[in-house]
Length: 322
Image (cartoon, rainbow, N blue to C red; front, side, top):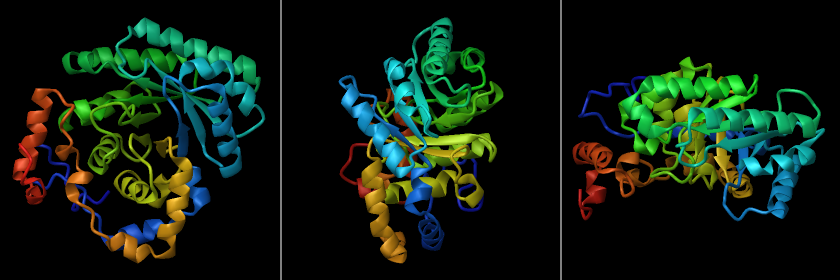
């Protein structure tokens, strides 16, 4: 990322709390993003409580038809998904201790080991087909960084070389905590950091994805998830987390979404006139985490709202109580 565009100065309260989007940079990204390229970055996701086998089968068909990278589901689907994906390049992705992350370290480790063992047995294709998206215990992280390191290390060990993504629930963290959580995940041997379960106070925002990329550097993966439903959102998130073309690789950047077909459909629209879409104005508060504080705890919400009061775009929230 260009440090001049958004300097990593978390102690600078006067900085604009937004990632800026130069139109020409967005145009370059849009022109580079073919449907095949975008599909290769997508984890097709359904984590609802009422998901049934027909929907899992439908996601498998989507992945095989369009080339999506992985299918992300709840652990119970490990009795089905490996059978459906056997012989394909599509990866299985399972969430651990979802969505709260409040189980013990031992419980998370056992769940990871059980998923890996069951999947490998049913798929029969050896290692390299499984991804585990684990949720950290945010409450323990705020009190004890070593606890978070230990729980990530335990899951990494239980995964036996399979990819581990660490969901930090960034909407419940301050900017400093986002950076620290990502650094802990990197030190603990995780392969990715991921911002949200999709059920947190915030979904994917460019600023949080930018912070995560800055925290882990170019050699670790960053996954954006939560509320990603159309292509321009994807373009902005790519600008924030994978601005350099070499980062637009599924081992370095990923999009988690339950709307993969809509993303591909809207991508075709913006590719018809990249300049117009890149220059289209977006209301800053709709993509800034500091304007989405309703579900946050008071102590975090107050920090975010302080950023709002200092922001030059605060006119958009003139009728809001902040």
